[in-house]
Length: 120
Image (cartoon, rainbow, N blue to C red):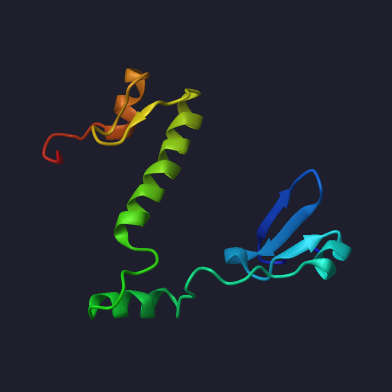
C-alpha cells in the first residue's frame, strides 16, 4: 500500500524501497527481503533531533550533523541539478568561482537579473 500522505518509491533491479513522508518507515519490497534484512552496525553518531543538535553546537558541543557548511554544499548541488534540467545542459561546475565552466549561457539562471534598486 502506498503512503496516504506522500512518500518515495525507489525501484531497482532487485526490488524496491517504499517510504513515507520525510523518509519515514522505509520498507523493502518484496516483503521477504524486508524480513531477511539485518540492520548494519551503527557507525554514525545518532542525532537527538535537528533542534537539539543545533542548540548543542551553539553551546560549544560538536558541530551539528547538518551544519551550514554541509547544508550549503548540498543545496548548491541540488540547485545545479535544477539548472541543468531547466537548460538541458550538462554542467561542469567551478564551485570556488560559482560558475559553469562549459556553459556561459546558464549564467543568467545562476546569478539572475535584478531590477534597479534591488541589486545585490
